Length: 114
Image 1 (tube, helix red, strand yellow):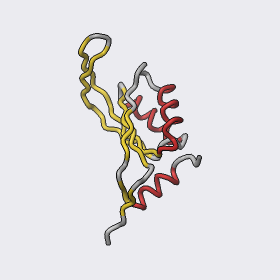
Image 2: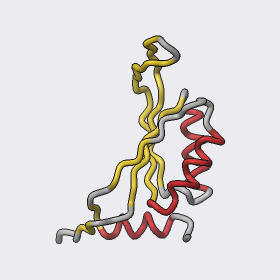
Image 3: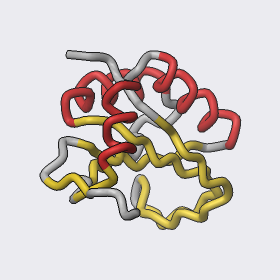
Image 4: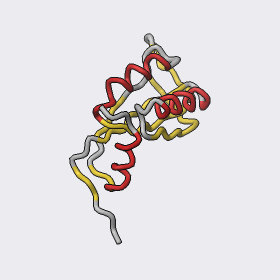
């Protein structure tokens, strides 16, 4: 039986990168423990190419896909900035167009209730 999809959800995916798997793991675990994120998925060894301080740079990083809700974004961003080793960490927010009702309900129950 197919599960129903929920549309117009307040769920969000936040993208960020970290300098190492260990830093990404620490960031993800802290955000989940503090209920600012329902889940943090680590994608190790991505290569980033970017402009920084007038030069083109390249770095091996770990990407985090952070699953959260729109209500948590301000607190999540503040906490990530406080914990992160980068002076300007990536913080991109993607809306979730739709998702399974069960998963979205689990996400909501895993987050701080505001």
